[in-house]
Length: 211
Image (cartoon, rainbow, N blue to C red; front, side, top):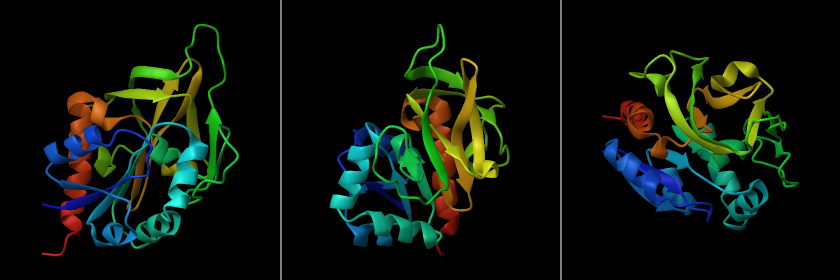
């Protein structure tokens, strides 16, 4: 079974992510050790909360360069929620620079009459990379669970793997490029659809492990 390092930087409950990965057939290992990130078969970067504390915690634990290194090495990587946003260069939520692994910014939803911010609850994905491994065995417009006030805006729109519409605003809900994947929604809270997304990620990890 593949060992998947779940990055611990004090930003959210890691228990439900680990449970989801176990159900998907992986061995999750919660860690903030650069060596364990290097040794794992894949990396998951979860996160809930605010952008600046997330970046401060990552930097204080010396995790910024190790995360960049494992992504550059081609190891499968999945960011979840805040773990998607901190991959970008900067955020309207704070002043800290992000990891800058993905070009682009994090923006706040515009207020609209009758639209709640945060965007919270179930919503349908529009798959812009329908052939992405993340979406295998999923229906055409799957329902997933969101909780966010900010969204990512990649400089290169082709890395978008899915979008979601909230009010009149259609925003990026997932990105995928080679070994780097990240989602704005919470797969661990998205019932069978979310479990299938995690299973698809684990299946890709399994394929990469040398026999």
